[in-house]
Length: 81
Image 1 (cartoon, rainbow, N blue to C red):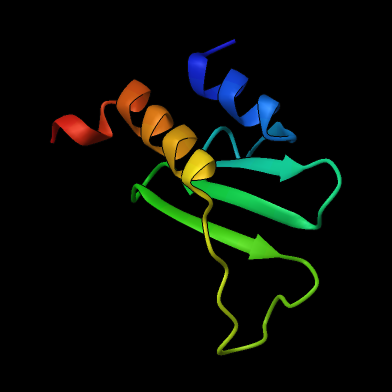
Image 2: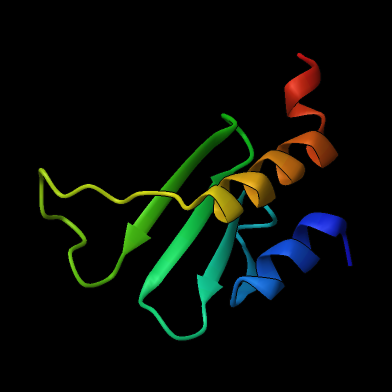
């Protein structure tokens, strides 16, 4: 388990790899929210199943989530480019 996986787990997320690791999802165990990494284009999003498809809704990252996201990007070498 990577350091970022451990960080996400401590925040209540479970890792789910989809589409042959093209889409990596950290799904929150209690809340209906996911942090999604798209590895082909190196994009990150946060989705909430309570308001998916509703425009104008903000989804904020906590500082702890941001630290885990940065660690994930560091492990993938995304920050070196």
